[in-house]
Each structure stands twice: as structure tokens, then as C-alpha cells.
Amino acid sequence: MTGEMPRKLPPFVTRERNRHGTVVFYFRRGKGARTRLPPLSAVSFDEAYHKVLAGAQPRRSVVGTNSLRWLIDRYRETANYRALSYATKRQRDNIFKHVGETAGTDAYRAVTRGDIMKGVQRRAHTPSQARNFLDAMRGLFRWALDIELIDNDPTASVKNPPRPKGDGYKVWTSGDVDAFEVRWLAGTKERVWLHVLLYTGLRRGDAVRLGKQHVKDGSATLRTEKNNMEVTIPILPMLADTLATGPTGDLAYIVGEKGRPLTKESFGNLFRAACNAAGLEGKSAHGLRKLGASRAAEAGATVSELEALFGWKGGAMASHYTQAANRKKLSQSAGEKIKNAYALTPNSGAGKERNSV
Image 1 (cartoon, helix red, strand yellow):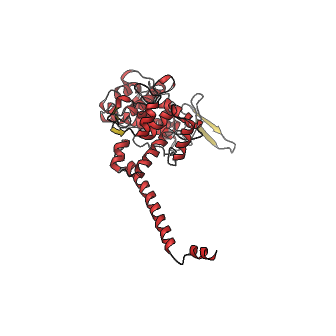
Image 2: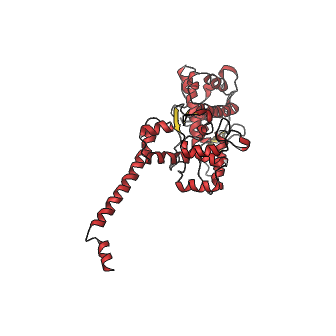
Image 3: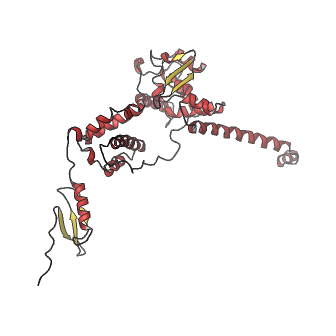
């Protein structure tokens, strides 16, 4: 009698019988994870086996022009990279530094969509970090594709993680400002921090750079860190008084201990601590920018004026504040009209009630 010879098990594949008596096949390389495979006789076995085998292969370590670190270094020399804002370049440099430390000797042509997805997932607990990582890698590989160093962009179909629900940073109220000022009196550096943020509307990265050298004829002019836009901001009397009282530094109004300038990261942490000390848990520097924009809009600032003051463009952000201010005014106006109409109605329920007392 003739018949087919039993198929030999491929490397790293084992045959086992489970508790139900069924023969099952597993792939396991060394002490790695065990992966269930289709039956050896199944048409899909070879495809599944080679897929898991490729995933289990250690990534080949390379040096020189084939490495991911080399690709990153070349990208950072390009006009594409130099055109990014200072803040974005600094952010991406930190990401590239970490990528270089963990995967710099990997072959950049071997980077897959799965690798990018894993990088995003590792940062999923902080969605902003996940988005920043993906943006950095997307810029890198799109450039590499444009100059034909790679045939496929591994970031092409990877989606940004969803933004967390809510309005983001908590907006300050006038009551919050009062509470902060009660805790941090005139003559403290914390009072200077508050008023620089509140009365200029600058982001913290720009606020820590603002100094006497930017002020002329009662206005401060500087280029924003985020989008390199020039903004001109009037130094309001309230802010001028606070700056005159100090303490401030020679080249920066916002200073830390011993009058030293601060980075935006250290300033963000110190300002949050000052908020906590004033009983304002969860409040931050960015929330003051929102309050400033709301106040400007409620004072009648137009979309163009808000964009000039806050360094926005495109109209969307400024319109958000002007529309909110208009709704508030319309609501108040409607309330007054209802109140007046109600008072003028001779047979209103309120009138009858007053007459019966």
C-alpha cells in the first residue's frame, strides 16, 4: 500500500494534543511567546507560519547608511526639517533621540506599519505624546519616500489616536484670578507670572522669553515659538504696574529663584504649583490664555484683532471666542427684553400676585 509521507514539522513548530484530544500546532522560538497555527494540512498553514516566522526574527543590527539613526540625521539636515517651528523641532528632537536610543541600529527599510503602530500604542496613555510621535515619524518617512530612499511609507495608513473628550485645559474665571492674587501679592514673582500670562495672552513658551528688549512705545513685539508669527501686544497699565514692581530679570520678565530665566517646561511646573498653593487645583498657564481671549472678545475685539493679538490664523480659533462672546451678549439682551416685556404686562401672574398681598 502506498500513501503520502507525513509532512515534517518546520523549524520552531511543535505538535501537541489538547485536553479535548485534538492535535494542535504551535510556533515558538526560544523562550518567546507561543503562537497557535492552523492544522499542518491546512492550505493556510504556510502563510501563517511564514508570517509568524518573519515577526519572530530578530531585527538585523546595521550601521552606516542603512540604519534608522542615519536616516534621522539626514532628515534633520533638510529644508523640510529646518522649516519647522523651534517648538516643533525641539519636540521632534526629543522623540528622535529616544527612537535612536531604542532602534537606531535597525535598518530603516525594515521598519513596518506594525512597528509604527506599536510606537503609537506604547504612548497611548498620553494621547498628545502618541500624536507627536506619529507626526515625527510621518515627517521622516514621507521625506524618505519623496527622495526615493524607501518604496513604501510605513506611516501612511496609521491614524492618529483620538483626542480625549472635553475642552482641554480648564479655563480660568475672574474669581480664580482674584484667588491667585490674594495668595500671591504684588512684589512676588508669582504675581508677575500671572499678569504676564493674563494681560499678554502669550503661550508659556513665548511668555518666558518676553523681556524689556521686546517693548517699544508701549507695545511688545516678538515672533511666536509655535508658528513663527509676529505679534504686537499693548502693555496694558495693569501689566506695566506689575512689571515696574517686579521682580523681573534683565532679559525676561518671568524669572525663577535668584532672578534666573525659566524654560517653558520648568515654568509650567512652577506655575501649576503656585496655582495649587492658591487653592486652584487643575489650573494651568494655558487656561489663562483662554480667559484673556474671552475677555478680549467680550470687549468687542474682532476676529482679525484676536488673530493679530494671539498669533492665530485661519479664523477658526478667533471665531470660537467671538461667537461665544456674541452668544453671551445675545442671551443677556434676550433676558432684558423678556424682563421688560414681563414688567409691562398688566395682567401678568407676577402683577396679580403683588396686588393680592
